[in-house]
Image (cartoon, rainbow, N blue to C red; front, side, top):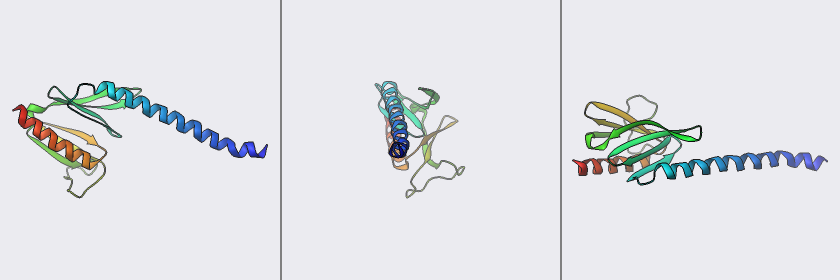
Length: 136
């Protein structure tokens, strides 16, 4: 009897981890459908983003679906800046890592796209500027 009580918490942890894994797999499958046919896409802890037909859109994952947050036309892109996520208007240095945001500026409009990884954000910044130059 006492051995069964000792193993019961491990059984609960196993069931919890299995459920969380199933939810993550479901999120990834929904992302694959959402990002189908895109030129550039990402999924991380801060949300999802995709570049499709010259429109960069980003979403958050809520209640089993991707909720569209905002969109930006790439051909209107003038400047992309890498900014710190929480410290106001401080630009991110080249050595910085972790959570950040890309600030998109163009035609009097500013928008922020959140990223969990600064290296991935730097890659996106370069690719977006290349595509914006190609679209001009």
